[in-house]
Length: 134
Ligand code: HEC
Image 1 (cartoon, rainbow, N blue to C red):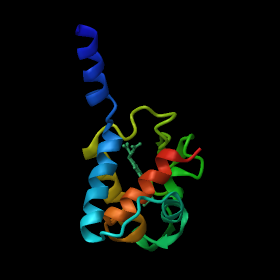
Image 2 (spheres, rainbow, N blue to C red):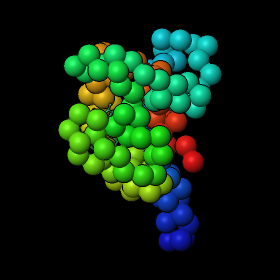
Image 3 (cartoon, rainbow, N blue to C red):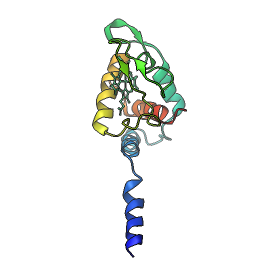
Image 4 (cartoon, helix red, strand yellow):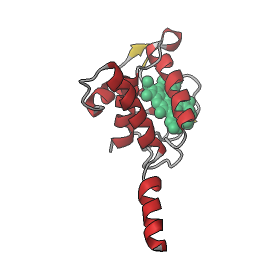
């Protein structure tokens, strides 16, 4: 009986991560705006992450300017020169573990590159890209 209870607890609680909750929440919001929405898309996320725009201080930047194209490696911040640890949760266990942190940096970083905040759809697409890229 005890074992069954433990198994039940594991299956209902432990398998839902901050990342899953975050994406599910974004998905609900997108569906409200657009009922035909079919799910977040890696390819759209890739474009958001790698395309270049006139961003902060009028510079041509992309997300890769600070995070690089290999998300399993550290990369130099384009503006400050400081090293930023890898974005991929596969090699950096601190990534996508706190909703507040994810939201704070997405907000700031979309402004750096796009001069505006990201939409729920864009955030879902780009997070899908970052967290599933090899
Ligand atoms: C000007 C440099 C810069 C640019 C451009 C930039 N970032 Fe960041 N990003 C940072 C810094 C600095 C941090 C916080 C330091 C850290 O977490 O190592 C960060 C953190 C993040 C995180 C935090 C994840 C977590 O849970 O820890 C995500 C997600 C992220 N960036 C995504 C993006 C996306 C998407 C773009 C493009 C829209 C982008 N970044 C563009 C500098 C940048």
